[in-house]
Length: 169
Image (cartoon, rainbow, N blue to C red; front, side, top):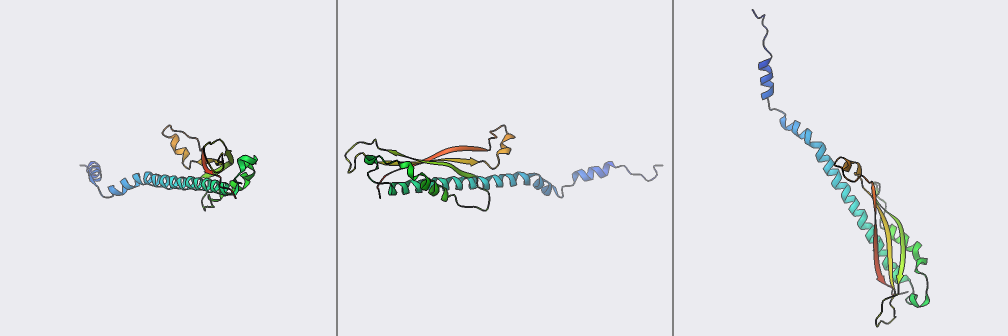
């Protein structure tokens, strides 16, 4: 006499064959990775937009410097670095203010003058103004790269420069 007890083996076999909800479990396993990939795409786009804004700022600052510096700056020997404060303000204004923290910052801006070009020009040598900015980029997901043995440096710096002929004011 078995006393009415049934073996748990058939119940376990029936439970193991059950496929209801398998898609939900698989989705729950994949969802964190999908969210991580989506977040990395969004943050990478923000870094790219910030970097492009810094490039546009340096370009605008170079154009400004080429128009405001005197045309005969090479002959007079005027220092072009006197315009660095104005040039720095222009280079930074394109970064704007975002409602999220910025990933790209302009750490320094400097200007230089090249008076070494030779040839037959109306004003010889022609003055060439160059604006150089050092940009620091903060990587938003730097901690995640440590899992794969990658570089875990949270920031890196790069230099952006642009040149234009000085047309004078």
